[in-house]
Length: 256
Image (cartoon, rainbow, N blue to C red; front, side, top):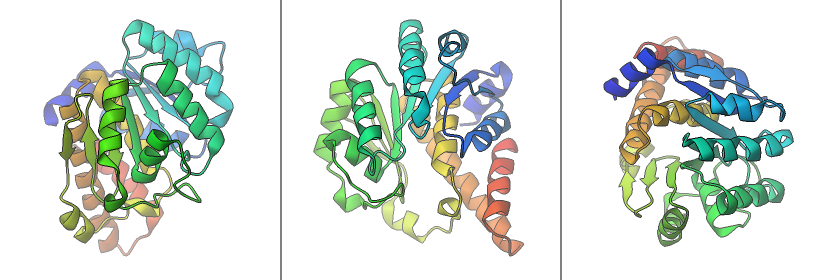
């Protein structure tokens, strides 16, 4: 992990993020914390040019006003061989978002889909799996065969996060990053803040800009969990709440 972070801080890769306004600032700050250079360009007349100069593209489907810009940016990224990360936030509850995610998977190349259990299940089955934006599924609900087939069909890496994290690559290899039983016992405030998943997707773009591989996703999962647990311990020690935790999480990333 340290080797990738050192490379990020040495090369300062430009990460073009088309993300939702709720978490845009946090995504930018956590990218700066890891040593990358964020740019949040949404206007359709400039996104192709911005993507051409970037080292990775991160598209968050919470930016529902910017779907045309995403299509244009992803096409440019595909033409230039730039890694693309798709965060299908909300598709488990929104037919509009889900249809767009399915369109992207069928017509363009996505290097990595980073989502929670509900979002991944919704994408591969094209169904509602939640009544809101939060994860409603458990590990026992996951259809592994469907996920492996989806990953192979689209030659995309699935980075599925929740109580435990999993990486499924285009060869249908599954890596369980955190033991489920151990993960359930860990103390983390990660779910107490808005945008922890969005920030992880942004960081995924920075890591894949250096090494676009399954092993890189495993490393970032481990890093993010460790930073979250450390930030939680520090916040609890201060008897602090969720906003203190958010700042401490970004601090932990910047102090790596």
